[in-house]
Length: 154
Image 1 (cartoon, rainbow, N blue to C red):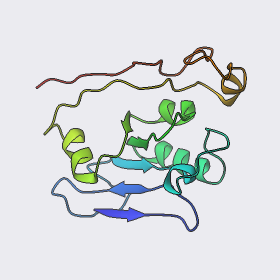
Image 2: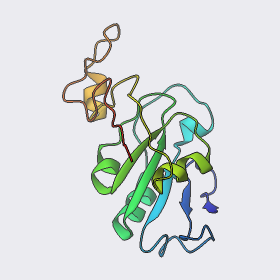
Image 3: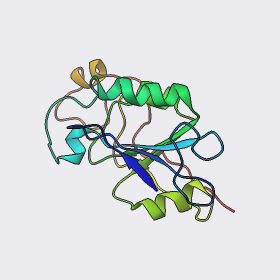
Image 4: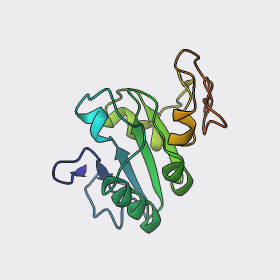
């Protein structure tokens, strides 16, 4: 599996061929790719600041999503604002520490995932700023509400 990481940033882009052999991110698996969007705050375990992706990382991720059909795996050590990324991706997976092999088992249908979000994913930083500090799950129109999740069966 090929991984590329821009200097000084935490976003990962992963592409693999159907046989598991590395291919260019433009080709991916028959015109798709898996992008693991690990933001700089999650990669460096930095627990403060805004929850949205900043430039140039956001531009790089959105450019990839607009170039090739992409399944995004986002590491959620805390809530994130990913509305633009979710809108451009053909699939969005919440990752709480799964390894690459487990992720690819889900993507290729070798494992049927199940899970629920332990927090909501807000729709914007404005919604985050308007939340009450001491009230959970109160953002306006969350992108994905607390407890959202899908279960796949074979």
